[in-house]
Figure (cartoon, helix red, strand yellow):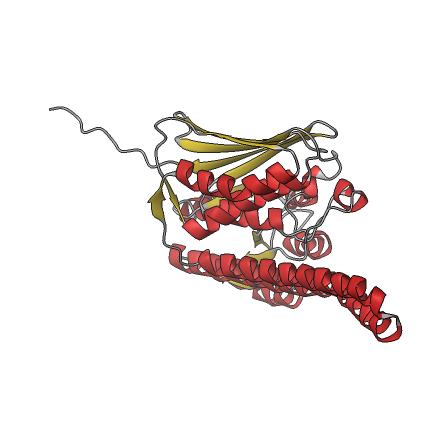
Length: 360
């Protein structure tokens, strides 16, 4: 999970130091500036989860910064710092959208608790917004196959028996598409729950990849494609959720085969001793991904131009699931691609390395 980004805005060096030090034990990225002008510059160019804001500053006061936040970054949670004499200003800040206020001097525990509550509020708002977007996306994705099914059922009622077999095939295909969408959404939902509590076991990544490759050999042969796995020797094991890691490799291999017409799909594993990570590479000689599609590749329901123009089947959720699984395993994923030449995915996973006992 990405560390929360916090901006501290106060014209007193002692307060900036106190707030920064109070939050130093937590996994936060904390920046501190001394005036409202500097805060406005940062807000215009960067995103913050939470801002701790002094109300009484120079020409650009706390309420001015709060107004800019409301306009430019409405999701950002604001906690205002105020002295006893400016309590009315703090109340006005709450009316204008601040989440909480703390009286100077505040104690470290009170500050940390207010920050925790503020970040919880930010996460809940993000989850709510993502949930609304997901429902909208699902509705849109299900509408097309439902419309097609309805149309073909009407044609089956009207037309001759000869044509009914074709209409029935279309209905079956669209029903499978809908099932794929529902299954993928359920997987994403389970992954969200697994981020809270997850149990991992040590696993040989080579054996796991071999299982997936064996399952896809028939499909590769049917398309006259190579499907080759070159396992790295003496790889350390990685901590995995077996079923999810199988799905990760399955999604990547399936994608590679779907988008490859000639040549093949080539997998390999290596161990990077400096990074203490195992790397899984999946390279294909397929149609490639356009530069404008690459930044959106892991977004839910996103389908690139080549996929749409080439009528390549898919739900637009496969790579979103891959990214969620990688993050669940504390790894990272990178992609390189050139249109007409193919695509390379690299998945990095933390390795289990046994420490050699020190000699006395």
